[in-house]
Length: 182
Image (spheres, rainbow, N blue to C red):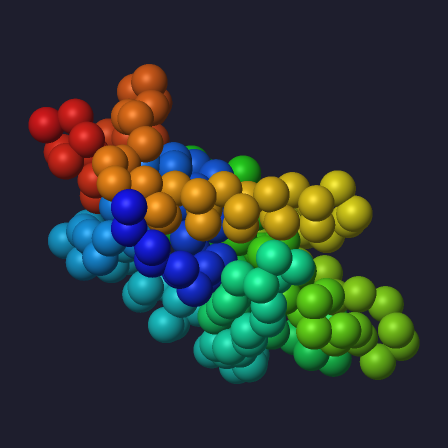
């Protein structure tokens, strides 16, 4: 049995919430996104959108079970206590929300609050759609994130990947689609 003891980040949490198989493949060093036009566009959006704001805040924490957690937040508005994550489109919106909640959880685990003592909030930014969505972290989300981290650790030790999902519309745009269904 493999013992990867992974450092778990926001992107991996998003992958897991979308497709545990994608998370497993990524933990094994298979990063096929470098070939993806959609990912290239996402990086371009991140690099060129919101250029006057603070960018790329890195944070780490330890989960209650001792797992090392890491995050790289796209941009922050510290004055207003908002973490921003920039995305190209809404196809995987639930996964995006969990990625932002993960970053908010890292702040929570570190005891970081806004100057008024209130917790930070999150925001998904979709510049191509000219749309934003607020994201918050509540007690249920914290419990679910701890469960998700434990589940990611469990699949990290599996010798074979989790089964393929029943084909979904977003699978056709996934960088792993050919590997899973080809």
